[in-house]
Length: 141
Image (cartoon, rainbow, N blue to C red; front, side, top):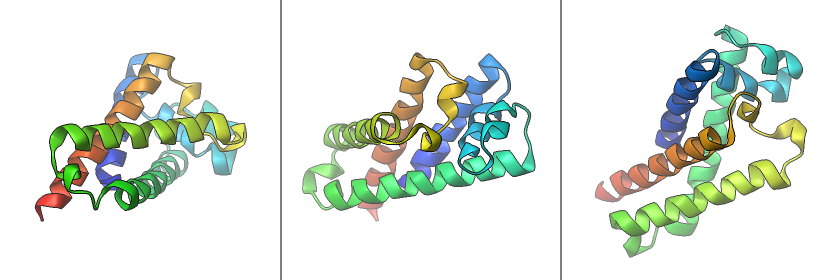
């Protein structure tokens, strides 16, 4: 679920980044954890910034996906689409709150430097969709 959430939200980051400047810019920005403001200014695809940014995004997504699975995954209602979506929306909302209200600015995701509020909502909506679909797919195994 975390991997699917990572892929869907990263795909949306690329689409939204392309509308504003460059598709790689929001993912490059995630690597600001390691490379500071240079990563925030790197709009073009770059092996160092883009790969590092995606890896950080993916690891964070796995973290949130694991928490979501531990809290929600064992419940029978998690197999149904509406409750699965509700649980995923709750998890994405908590992730967003932690990312932007509890985390020091130096460790925020970084893509907020390239996207507006509506796009940020869509990033977390895509993340929730990935969690919900991934959870339901895992339940079928």
